[in-house]
Image 1 (cartoon, rainbow, N blue to C red):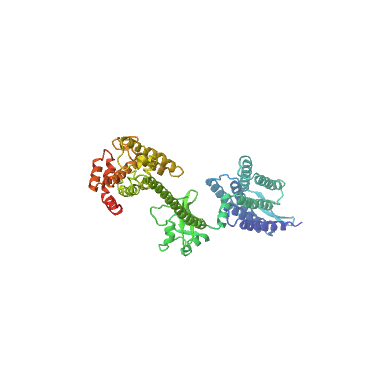
Image 2 (image 1 turned 120 degrees about the vertical axis):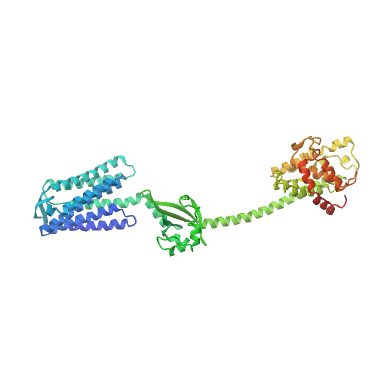
Length: 570
């Protein structure tokens, strides 16, 4: 029975296994797996060479090659198993074992001269095979001890992982354990019976098939690898790599769609200053924008027709910093949507503003209409509503120049101008006999007239109850209620004193009294501007707030111009 062909088949199986491993793991070659498949091929080549040789020298060379290959096959098999079990194989130990295996291989290669492993070798032919018989030298025991130690270490590692590890497939560990035990027995049993038939080539092939399966399965478990593959296949995702000195290392096709100039930059070179778009977007040359400080932070980048988000990551191997990885993500569609949304919002805001202004104008017209209607019942104050409102507007413009009065901000003054026409709405509740009286009031009539501020506050609150503007409503009510209060506390209806009087009422009081002074009434003549301003000046700290009163007096040029051009009957 000729068994030579089984060793040739084993040799070609080893070659096919090596090729399949490379094809399956072309993008993620593991150096330990690759070394294992290479040494297995070398070992099986030695076995085939030995059994086919017709000379002692040829058979011995093939036998030595198979032994040397077996040393490294089993050693790297252990390395792969430890890696597969997610255990640490410390470098000093790993390096020491590799050096020992290398020394053992060198001794095997020189055994023809030293006889450390084989003594008195000779050929025998069995089953169509050329086999070597020999006496074992002292080196052979060292070889067998090394092989046994490696094999037992692998078996112990697998058994320990089956019971302690949760991040490794138990099914895979059980299969490799069976293969290791079967391989050990396949080596020991023929040796114990004294036969020189060696089944190790097929044991190696069985292990190779398992490692092929496991290396492919590992890709399923490798989340990092899967994420890399997903990102590489994603549209709108790119990367640019730089070394520690920010020299360009490469990029993917998406990065080129963002920055086409990258295709013109040589590897291991800095980005030239002429590519200002790249330099500006990536903060490449900014001394105050350190990539290290901004790692893992998102920032925006833009090209002519693209928007994106960039994140800087550090590249490191075994805690040794190697460079930078700039991750690019397409954000063009999102930005276009936001721009469109902003445009729509602006248009909508414009329409809302336009409609709001229309409603506000309508409200203002209604308020002025009500105030004018009330004023029409009073024979003595014709045009007072309009004039006091205009006075407040002139006064407000001057107040905005005085930043020390923080409460007089533009919004407050705008609302006060709108509220001014409502300050005398309470007169609607005063009897016509009193309100339309052509002369001075009697003390009793005056007391009735003094009720109009409080009644006005109630009316204003009801008129504005459905308006969703609390600040405006408060200002309007205060103007109506307190515009006859005096700084010294002798006003009405509440007798408030100093800053107890709301600011809006103190401002209204100045405009209200000034218009009364310079306007002709049925019971008096109009006073001159000199007389009116002198009265106001003398009443600062008595009737009027002394601070805002001084500011009101500063408005004299504008007020005189207004009354001369707008009032016909003073």
